[in-house]
Length: 126
Image (cartoon, rainbow, N blue to C red; front, top):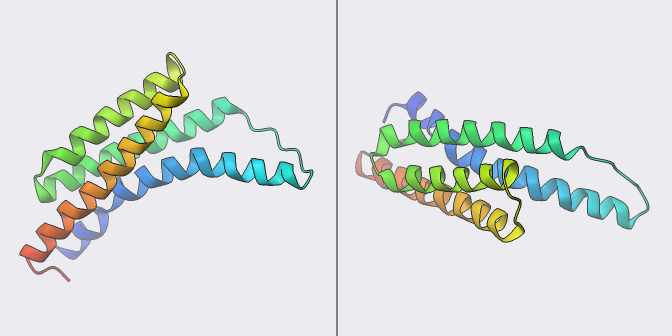
């Protein structure tokens, strides 16, 4: 893999994890602030749109990463996780489905990371 291609191939994994951090990190920050008496009002629609944008970026990165390692598993799993999360956000909300979707997204990111490492080790990347 060329160096520039290798650097851009991390986009899918990083933005997948960033989508999870955006959702649950914001929730944790608001909870901690409320413990010390600071009230923060967050518009859920804006948060959902941000996470949706990160999901689109993550899927684009996973597709780009698939082009370098040719292992379809992480891409298929992330597509399923994104579809589940979009259903939860814009269709019928369910906390267990939301947690499942984010867990699948993290698993897809880790799987993608391992697939890229295998390819990089086989081709002696820097």
